Image (cartoon, rainbow, N blue to C red; front, side, top):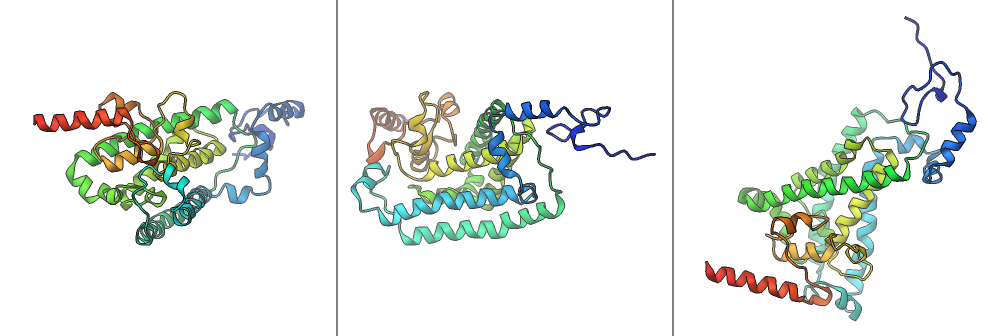
Length: 312
C-alpha cells in the first residue's frame, strides 16, 4: 500500500480531508472565509503559541489560574473594605464577618484539593492524552454563542438533579455535600470549598458538556471561563448593581442573592445558574437583597413556611 501525504490545504478547519484532487485550495476563497469570521482576529492571537495551547494541560491551567485570579481581588475587598459603609450596603449578610480562620480553612481545603486531585488528574491527562491540533479558522459567532448557552443550560439541569439528590438523601449530604454547607454565609473561597468527589463531578460535567456539540477550542475555553465566573459570582456574598442577575431582563438568572439564600435555607434554590427548575418544582425561595433587606416576596415565603410547620 502506498502512503499518500496530502497538503494542508486539503483539510478543512477541523482537520478533515476535503478535496483530494485539488493540489491546493483557492487562496481567495480561504481569505474570504477567514475575513467572514468575526472571531478570527481573536483566534489568530494563538499563532506562535500553538504548542502550549494544544496541550491537554492548557485547559487545566486556564481554569485554575482564572479561578484564583477572580478570587484574590474579592478577598482583598473582604479583608480591607469590610468597615466601609458601601461594603455593608451591598453585602447580602452584612452582620456576618469573614475571619482569618475562615479564610485559612477554605484556602487550605482548596489547595489540598488541587494538589491531591486536580494536579494528578491533569498530569495523567498530559501523559495519556495526545495534543489536539488547533483548527485554522475561528468558530462562527453563532456557534461560539449557542454552544456556550446550551452548555450552561445542560450543566444547570445536571447539577440541579445532583444537588437536590445530595440534599434529599441524608447519607450523601452528611458525607459529601455537607462540606460545602459548613458556611451559611458564603464568601468567595467557598466556591470550591468542596468534598473531593463533588469537585471531581462538577469539573467533569463542566469539561464534557461541550463535547455534545464538538465545540471549537476557543468556545470550550470561553465556556470554562464563563462557568467559573458565574460560580464565583454566586458565592461572593454581594448584590452589586452590575451583578450578572441584575443585567438579566428575563429574571431567570439566579445570581449571588439566590445562592446565598440556598446557604441560609439549604432545602431551597438547588439550581446553580438559573431559576426555572426551582420555580417549576417548588424549590425556589425569593432571595435576600443587599444590606440584608428582605423583600415582600421573601417575607411572604417565610410566613407561609411557618404556617405549614404549625399545621404539621
